[in-house]
Amino acid sequence: MHRLIVLCVLKLCVLLTTCIRVSAQDSTATQGKMSKDPTTAVLLSLPLPGLGQYYNEQYWKIPIFTGTCAFTGYLFFKNNADFNTTSDLYDQAVADDADQTVISRLFEQKEAYRDNRDLAGVVFLATYVIAAVDAYVGAHLYDFDVGDDLSVGIGPTRSQTLALSFRMRW
Image 1 (cartoon, rainbow, N blue to C red):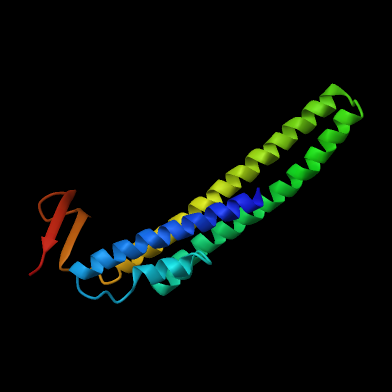
Image 2 (image 1 turned 90 degrees about the vertical axis):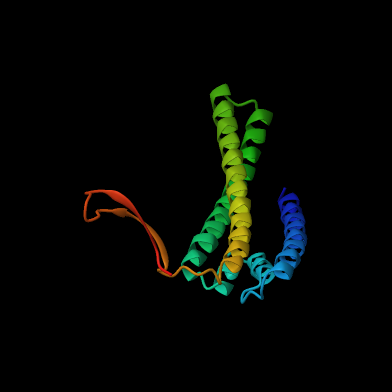
């Protein structure tokens, strides 16, 4: 099971880098030179989620992606170990012709550990992919102007208590 997950992650990484290289070549050909390369951001994010955010100088996102991946990775291996232990106990109880309540309890525990392991693996992979996509988007938007020339706000105005205001300075 572990080899299958590693193989899927590697295939996903190859697919992402191929798509991103093609997209980055198309987007940079039509626009000016960007100061942050999206391909570099994704390639940095693949070995460790959060490195792409470091490259993009989005430091507050690093503990979110790295922490989520570390925690779900821990949960995956802990639940896998508990699943293997409970599965061995279940097999032993069936072989020893133990009480049906013991067998059913062990079976339910085994299935709960399997479900928790699978859920942790899915959350880990989803976080990994989201970190790579976020690094890619963050690199593209790095040079985006977020100045005060254009702003939208909700709040009081001079004539109304609550209003939607739109300001654009030239």
